[in-house]
Length: 255
Image 1: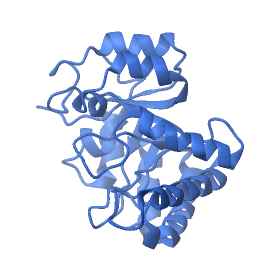
Image 2 (image 1 turned 90 degrees about the horizontal axis):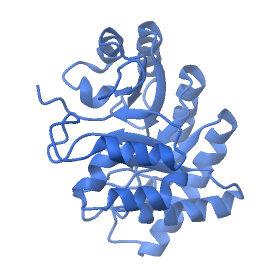
Image 3 (image 1 turned 135 degrees about the horizontal axis):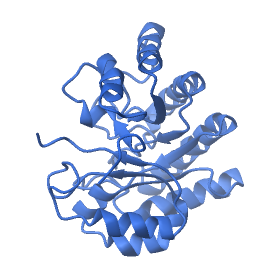
Image 4 (image 1 turned 90 degrees about the vertical axis):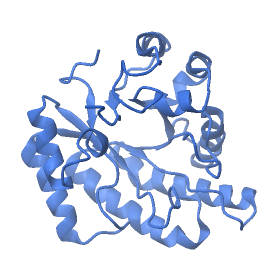
């Protein structure tokens, strides 16, 4: 269904069994020319040597790094974008992302929002998320970089569970930056299906806000064809509504 020469391989799922530094070469051997990755380090600001080792592995493999996730957190936070005690860390982390983007050419950046906290009030936590995302736009925008918000499934404490949730935050970011599309939606068809969303309705309503697409089948989060998602119909609709970006394979192989 997906041509490896044009699809984007998610290093963190397709090659999860391999050490991080071996994944880019494995993707190249499998026929992929473009890759994406979850944050490949165990901290938000890794030592320079670890950054150089990862960048070197991508460069030696000869693959294009299309997209990169921001740090997910080390205490189950599901991101640190909206967490008030970690704003300074988030901004230092954004500088690290910028350095990798300059070297490797990545231009799409998934920024996990972070779980809802007991304190501060929800509106205050959201204001922190918007301010930090505006900062990320200002740092990465000059490189042509676009931060992305992704709705996630199965996490009751995660505030962005629908595309509408993500777009409502992005509207505030665009208003603050004065630039429409300064940040965009990462549309993961697996997460939307797992949340019970009407995929066609979401695509119809929000295709213009989508800057990157990931696929895995549901149920199972395995390769397309192992579940019930009609990828042909949904992806054709995305194209018909103007999406011209890449399709990333973010599934865990079933075999």
